Length: 242
Image 1 (tube, one colour):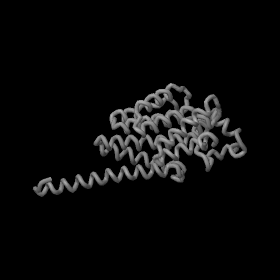
Image 2 (cartoon, rainbow, N blue to C red; image 1 turned 60 degrees about the horizontal axis):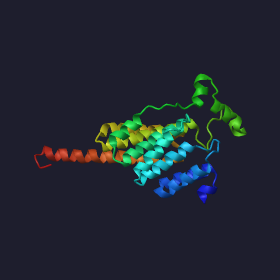
Image 3 (cartoon, rainbow, N blue to C red; image 1 turned 135 degrees about the horizontal axis):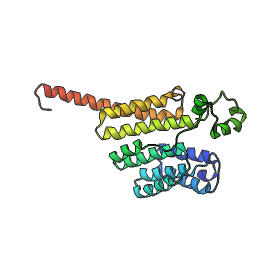
């Protein structure tokens, strides 16, 4: 009932919350219901591609890999030129590969070049250019008409959201590299991911808490593995059995 009655952006948030809590079947139902009820609708809060890739990820989390493949393929066929959706699909497909233990495929997917760049504040500050998204945002409400107030404290801008998603991509790359035995490359990816995430609004974005925690946990695993390897090396140096 929530998925069917909440406003689309609220229902989307509830679906994400269920994913984060591990309720994958319930999250999949949220995204599917949301996709069905918004079919044919338009608006800035309606993104069919985002609903599809979220459904695909939940299917993957449940081990239903073939169905996840089909949903990702459907999402990829949507040519919406949306840089956020493109980045999310890259990350979710990488998670899908990790769920299946396909480390090489995960690394290749996360490194695949993006087709759509993020247009936003940089266009105005670097080229003195007002793009269509900026124009819409400036004229949208009294709060956003002030050209100097591009940071809405309650909502991330597209550029900020893209930066966080890219930071998550680096964290996923590091995970694949760590599992693949590439410890030094993984460490560099995790450090870069953490630095990029906290650079957005000086780390005051509550939604990156999980990303920061996961990245630090991954770095801890690497440090522990290095320490264990070092202790074994010291024992071997004494002539004892390793």
